[in-house]
Image (tube, rainbow, N blue to C red):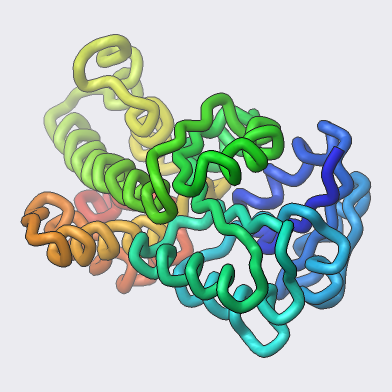
Length: 291
């Protein structure tokens, strides 16, 4: 049993923490909006009013935050993790953020307080977090990955060590290029099926097991076909952020990413039209706003 601190109780974090509690870990939680942690406290988590309090009571800290800026603020802000951490502690960043910034953050954290860093973004969405079936791609030293593994296995079905710090985030960028472009094409496909007179609700069944099949297809296409946009599982703004990161990282290493760039532009325009905080299934509205 480890003493864990979990910072960031959003769509994903709220589903991960119960698995850590069920595994017997002591879990302290913190969130900018305290009310989001109420259900977890009822399940046995301990709410902390400050980041300092979380750090003081934990051997391993887990972050699940919205973007690179949020991670930087929580870790290096005036009352952040770095100000209160110490050698021997380990930070596991489950967020999806910029790979190069991750490498910089890791070096800075180790320099300022001696704490180790493992970047371990996840894939599988809210459903995967709820079922503890996430796939986890990690970057870090062999020693720190070994220390992280028993904790991460509580929330996922598979952990793959991809290389040094930053490798997990770069792998997640690759993952999101596929997910984001796939989601855009699924919306186009459902719109075409419906406009052409096909019963689009049968698409997942018809394509299951074929080369076009995927988990996004099985999840998104029924929602798009029936225009069921709740509960929210994947926010549009999250995929926009990840696709924009993919384009930036590709440019930084001299690669082109025309498909991801197009998806980022189109999905960004969709988000700017009032859908940023809506589910990814609302992409169908780009094609059938009045249908």
